[in-house]
Length: 337
Image (cartoon, rainbow, N blue to C red; front, side):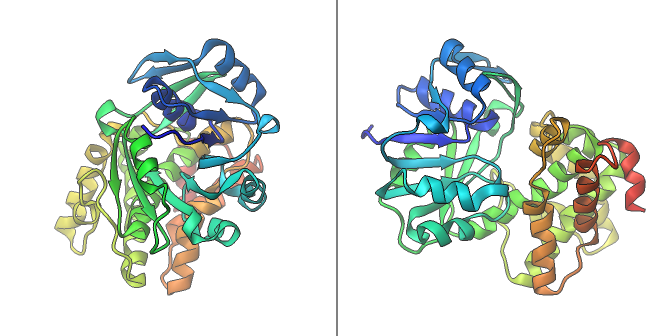
């Protein structure tokens, strides 16, 4: 494999596991994180992957203050709240022809392109989840056969590093190259808005949000709003891991609505143990990126003139939890009535 200097900036749960897989395959990658205890654990004990897969791998890890030189490829895995300043800082560490690949939720590519230019930005969505259990220990919460990525560009002219990025990601799982990348972004946003949103609101896993009838109705409504705003905006939502989620979950009559409702727990079963990163943030007393997830659906709905009351409500509830006015629990279901 051709040598490039590659790093993961914001190597938390997802980044640590990705870095462990890549390192295990013999490719050098640097894991960068502000959490000193996490970095120290990675340096001394290696990356410990638990959950549906279990292994320990020695990795190269350090804090941002120790960054030196420039990188050909930077994988960005931080939260979006501070994107403007983070990307501005990373610009100085990116080679002149280097590329930044954002793994962030929502629709972050255009904002990043304003700093770097479209040709230096790639977007990637992941179809698997992870949880940071302790410094250096990350749990893979999705099944091994669900380890896949969707990779795309917002520029018509692909970065010269595109094929290298794909090759590196394939060390962990399958990589689908998406021509309609905005449609792929909305596939992931739909899942995050529905399942991450409700996981954070209810204080539970994806599977636990999908099972009870009351919470599943709200999950279904969140999915429907995403599908409908895309229809109005002329966006074609792409399949996820070969499954046409619009065909499965959209409805325009009682029979299709009942089928959609029935299939939701089945559709998410491979990720049933996944706990939303937003919920993990709430449990640590941190601010979430709900404005970049459910808030992105609401914002787009306003732009195309389509109401999104359920997504609006999720944003409101999670902000109330952030302020300490509510706690993540199933009692929050009453906030939707």
